[in-house]
Length: 629
Image (cartoon, rainbow, N blue to C red; front, side, top):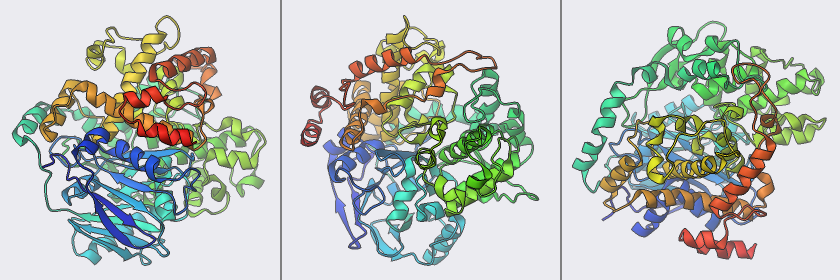
């Protein structure tokens, strides 16, 4: 008997409207685990080289991890993946909420979707009963309308819904998959893939529980973490938005399309101001007592419904400081539009910010923008553009392609100001001129820039953070602003270890915000759930293996080592603020990349894992696919 898994993968062929079941076995799940790992496996195995991401040959995967749906705090996560319509490479995005747990409780570890429906459909899963149903009546509706209709039509208010939104229907290349109306698998354009398959939604109802190898041990291991979460009042009060003021004070808050590291309007858009003004409730995810999610309400100029949640840190910065906007109500409204239409707030905000910089530099005019004065701080123009992008109307039709594709069509050196890696806009978590390994992680990520499987240098500048890596041989704290000088090799090694572990987290299905007590704690969780004798070493190898398969996928799609590049802006110094003069020197990055490739066993020309590395990771089958290329 499997524990933590059901050993059941649902196969859905939309072209022929057929469903089937795979039972891969314990060895398969112990090798690839879940989430990112399962996605990477199915994409490399089943997507033909050169496949159109928006064509019927793409494969869309929804994958849980062994922790998903268990009593472990932070276990409400699942991953969504396909060949990305935004980058043309490996696409993967992670999301919290309740949908993944509901799928697990229905008895499924993953869904692998192939083909393309002729007319709109939705998938209805009730435990082991699966139906492909017509969805013409859902097409063109906002996400809240779709969820209401499905719950009424299916007669159960406890149904959980994942959907692509209007933006996905319109093939916006950074459309996302929305769970429960305000939990987003935001990055790499998975909503556009879902929309291209005319799969409007997946409604799930599960009535079983996940079998655990040792339920008593699981509850014992998670007890201290659950107790600590109940005391985390600051995070409950402000959520991730509470970081805006702190990061601004550090001089690392991206502003005006990453031109600056501080924003004079930071207090107006902060979590503290939100809590005092428009916040009306707090939400959470499955099995989590933290309640870090925001729910806001606005009336008057903008109408914002708490049904759609509220802006988190990434939305406040992408739609706020990156666009030079300090109007919290306008940001909340734009965030609602993204959730109602199903769009990634990061790519949306950074694409708008790019147009604003180009407009102020005279590279775009009102002739290009349909009359919009796209200057930093123009909140009305920003919200108008968000609407246009979702509907592919006016100037928004071009911006729906993503900033890099749009810039290539416009020309006039506008491409220079697209803050992206491999075509995906850089998250505004921090200005990476202040966190050097972050730049390294962005450059080498197979998805394009993404903060959800990347290192945050400042974690390891103190003794508290070192508990995570000291057992791995990294013995002393390392300054955040060091990369390739005398501390370079240690920082590069630290980046490798952290990124391997972060990718493993995306295979496991566990939230990154939990107060874990080191890697040994997570090992104990895995052991008590699965009954396996897993070690920390084995779990790190899961992450390294999943990352290697994603890199192999990208190589097969035409990516090389030249695509592992940081944006030129981060090698130019910040002009003001506490970090004035900070930059990531290009020569340091080049040295770090060279060393990182050696440590990872990646070919310095192709960027792909070497045969020796693939065999060492136990996935020699990948070498055969690469040899065919």
